[in-house]
Image 1 (cartoon, rainbow over the protein chains, first blue to last red):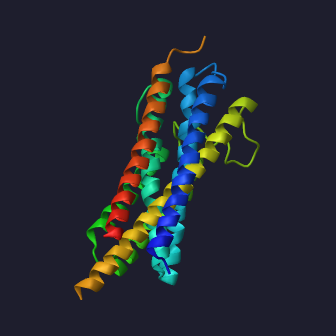
Image 2 (image 1 turned 90 degrees about the vertical axis):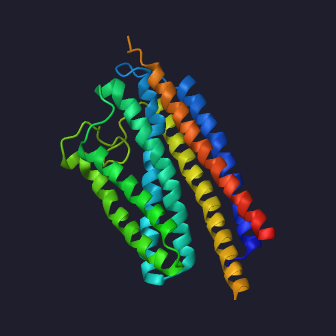
Image 3 (image 1 turned 180 degrees about the vertical axis):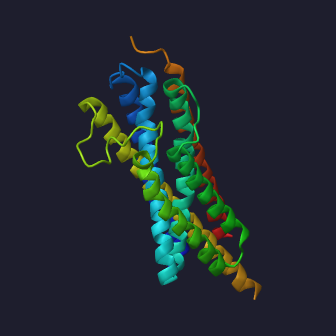
Length: 234
Length: 40
């Protein structure tokens, strides 16, 4: 059973993890900009890679967890599962804004265009819009049980999209490059670049953990307040 | 000679920092507000 004290403690833990992750992000900026070599063909724009790819990882992690918890909620009907799914979906939307802005900023100097309606980009945009819809739906439905059930269905749809998005670069002709880490063979990247990329992966994962913990605590505090208010009203 | 496209890199790093900090501050403010309501 969640209490106000427990939710406050969880929020503090989340804040500490987030602060550590922010310090790590500063470290990634310094390492990527100062101590990682410039790629010969793409120039400085290639360094966007150290933010774009980890942001993609963290986005799919967030939406994947939200989707998995949605399946679990439909099975177990536990309110706490719904609250963690909501937290993960909101953090995923924030992270996907990074993914969907750094991508075009990188694409313009390298591909010559900000955006192209190919399978990878379009399906990622669709996933983002699906989870924006998930959050809007949660804001519109007042009954907590209905809200949890309806949004869980959208979460499951998002989960089904994720493996498809990963496979788009193999299934369709696309401007987007193939994966360089999440592939059957060894990562195809020089050592210094790989270290920076892996550090950034770690920082974005930690950032996700810190933000989700805080957002879950916020959801729990809100839920407790609404319960108190309903109880007081009779 | 690598192409001169450093402005795109700067833009991406600034946008990322702005989104991360914006969301962190938004969460902190909402949490503060909810904690205040919990005390009242």
